[in-house]
Amino acid sequence: MDITLTDNSFLAILQLTSPALPVGAYSYSEGLETLVEQNTITNQQNLQDWLASQLSYGAIRIEAAVMLRAYKSAKIGDLAALSDWNHWLSAARETAELRAASWQMGRSLMQLLGKLQPEILPMVNAVGNPSNYAIAFGIAAAHWQINIQAAVLGYLHSWASNLITAGVKLIPLGQTTGQQLLIDLQPLLNIAAVEILALEDDELACCTWGLSLASMQHETQYTRLFRS
Image 1 (spheres, helix red, strand yellow):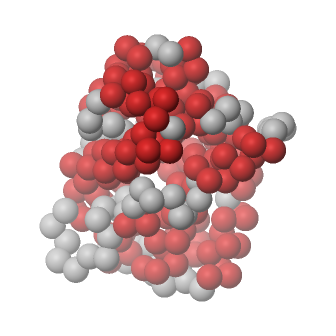
Image 2: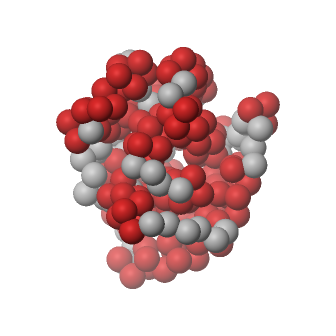
């Protein structure tokens, strides 16, 4: 996928997907902590296979697809559509932890956007609270004039980077191994981005029962480093 960016939009996507963005992404493992506890994921290959399956069939595809719809709605100022997609995504989350994570990160990003860009407060208020992270990300990407292809690829890359960082801590893996894993996933990130960009509304679906079970079990896991 060829992407052309202006200097400003390039810097904007770097900021929006940075681990330094104060939204709390580092505190979530999306069920990975349970899978490591159960010895389902014990090494680099296990983690790579898990992330690859999520990119091919998992809930991250729905998140990214809804983010794109929020992006397009924000571009044309369709506040009703933003609110509708926010409710849709909340209903699509299969566990309390995954929904809470999306809401917390969304709330943090919306609050940040309101302070950095007060002119988009009407849009932020129209979505309301709770706001899903994908919705807030789409609004930010649209307002900062980030190319739509860069927005979806950046969203997927930041998701993968966050979970690899969690895996490095939990399994544990070396830092170099984590970076190699991120490189190995690049072709699949590109493929997923292209497929997500082409999804119609009636094609928004996923097969993510493994994630759902791990997330539900994490709610009562005795020892936890992560909030999901």
